[in-house]
Amino acid sequence: MILIDTTPLVALCDPRDSLNKTALKHLKLLTKAQLAVCEPVLAEVCFHLSAPSQRNRLQRVLEAFHVMPAPVVDAHALWKEVFDWLQKYSEHEPDWADAYLAVLAGRDRRHKVWTYDVEFRTIWRRPDGSAIPMAVRV
Amino acid sequence: MSSKLVNVRLDEKRLERARRLRVNGFALSDLVRNAIDRQYEQLVQSSTGLNVEAVMQRIYDEYPDPPSLPPRDYDVRDRRKAKSAILRKLRAKHR
Image (cartoon, rainbow over all chains, first blue to last red; front, side, top):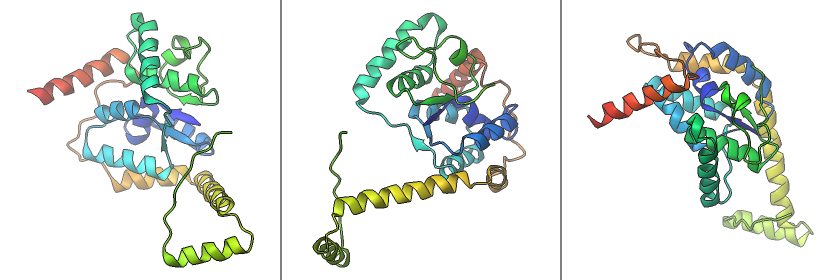
């Protein structure tokens, strides 16, 4: 399963985004896999895509590519893991969505993250300290 | 492997069909599992067969930005600028 982060989703839904063409190229490579998105990422995306046209495109992208909600087992335990992760990386001021993705990637080691954020490659790790598998190279 | 119980409602016609299938040795649980697997495979195959560029172009054409919409003035990858933009929106909302 590929967990989509905010940056590629915004880039896909905004043809004027500087990463739009890159995101389209990556989407072509990733449609064979099951794509998933979590609520914190969707909330961030909606901040960056605030116009109705942009949000309509977001909805259509999720539908057209069968993007499913990221599966969450035991949400209460997940919150605790996310808070613990935020605490661990507090000096780098991560966001809730960063932590959420890192924890989800740690819960199921088959998950990969599709992101253009450099921190996922350089700083953030899964809760056990291992590297977060990336869905694409940038 | 852990599994969960799923209840499915059936109308009279399907109930009768289910009874006849069961009488003829078909386990309903197997039928449901097979149907889910088959439908899922179709879903994945239809995704892989998508012409991504054509689909995306259709979406862009269907929902164009109004000419008055200014381009975003920050890079979403820039953590600080993205955060500031979100804060600006939140503040504007509460004014």
